[in-house]
Image (cartoon, rainbow, N blue to C red; front, side):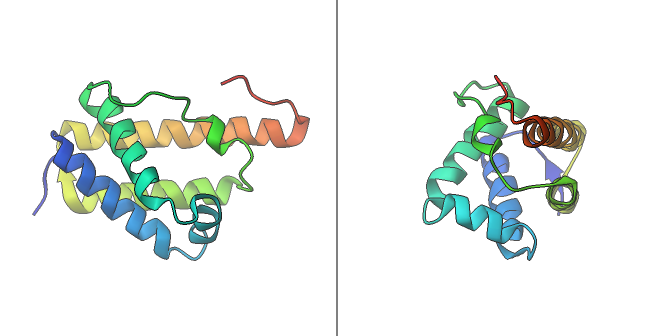
Length: 129
């Protein structure tokens, strides 16, 4: 049953379900597993805080979300798959304004990260943020 996306427990469910899909995906799992290795619990904790800050306006995430991604060997296809799995997870579990906002924000992040990583890869200029 779909529910509104409005509490930290909802964020946990979203993140846990999404990253379960990531970890099983033939395209994305190798990249994520190579970078995160055995630190999945720490990564999930960061993602809970990140999405709680972004969607619920509770400032629990501190850091620069882009920089850990700057050197990843990813291309447009990776961002498309990431976004597809994210939207699929939201659509299967949530409804309402915050669910739509989550998908919109994920799309904007994927576009920005792809653009910045592509620029960095082609110019070798390290992004500031």
